[in-house]
Length: 263
Image 1 (cartoon, rainbow, N blue to C red):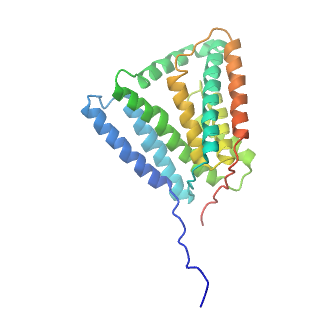
Image 2: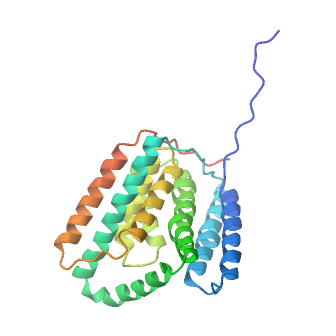
Image 3: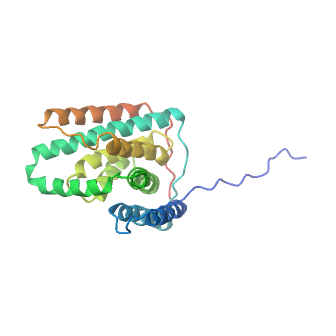
């Protein structure tokens, strides 16, 4: 009589295509509810949702299929999830300070800042409960999930053979370039680097998504209207936020092994 245990089927790993399908279903439901409530289909928030889900999610599905990589999904420990949220809050302070500092030091970008403010006012309008729900889904949750699936999930797996430092540098830079806005290029490159390091030192892309969502939520609901004259307060926000983010990431304890591309 053999003591051998029956073979166990390997657990399925959620992939770019599956995540895209789920996000698309939620987006379509939100779109239908919004139209029924009177939100015009040309609303900037619905366009942003379409870009996030179809554009970024489609890119994630493409990378998954063509590069044959998976985005292994593991949930972080409660401790690491809390540290990831703290990282996001710190990154939000860093980002707000960086934009204020740029505005003070680079007056030539005044028109770009003005155009960005107009766009953000339309994106973050909260005149009703439905508006608030749209902001939570479109600005806080959807980018955190879909962008982290692409950058810290699939693209990080594409770079499995690279060193941690190389992944942090490359994915941070790509994250900044991805947003196609010179105003936020350098701040978001740093944010992308910290989010990559968060994934490296934790359960992976899901932990980075928690940090990303906390960053978005803090930026929208706490630091949206922060303003300061001069450079000293913004500089202090940049230094304190950057240091606090590194300190929080340093406390993570669930180091992730990057899945290599499949042959």
